[in-house]
Image (tube, rainbow, N blue to C red):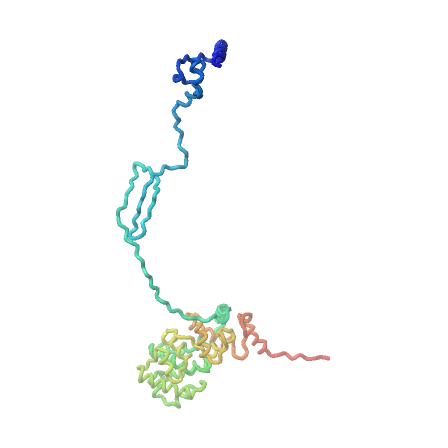
Length: 373
């Protein structure tokens, strides 16, 4: 077999097809498979393992090229960092990315100790709020706005002849407060025009608690006439004047409980007196007009028969800042539009949203029809 290989190699060499093989005397000196034909015949059979060619050896002996690193990967340095947060839990991070700082940048390590976290207990004081009932009528605000508009377009007697207009503006503050109280005591079930004229007669006689105390009852009754229940009211004025002289230095009380102790003074008078004389809003002054209109507009959860019942219900839901205004608005509105017997519903802006607007149809006189044959 070796002789055939030698002969083949020699033939190929003649045609310059292959390079001249290197003459090798021993197997251990064999490096390339191309040198195999030149091995002695005795050594050839012992050669079995293949050997790299010269080209393969040249390629494998070259140094490995420096390949660029893959993008998107950062060199990671394994390190443990502990951050102390006072008495808080220590945060451990085992992987910290390697960061190269610019020459002008400096990394400052804060060695200050952080104050431990403190727990604060916030105590919220209980705030007492007024407990309001559900609003009886959802249209109450539209009612109020319409009444304001109607009152601005049509003056009422209460605007110029009301109790707040009965005091002598030239008198001192104490005397003016007494005048307002007397006007309120006379106004019960009496028209404003009648009360205003009676107050003019009283002021002409120097209206003070001392003068009222010394005035004979008969003379006082003549001055009050034609005020409703003028004889009873004359007695109330005499007793009240005596109390003011003895207990209040001719001034009037500045609170509701003491005002209600005066003869002839009721809740409506007391609350209106506090508002007009002392400029303090203590409640809603509910007279016959406020009582009637509040029931007609369904501003109450249930209908009432007494003004004091109406006041209690209104104060449960009506905003306090409206208490003084409601009395003045409703009194004038009741004098001009929402009258007791025949309300002028056709002129009222609330006729479409007023539950009592049907009263106008009932109060209108029925026209008689004549049958002609």
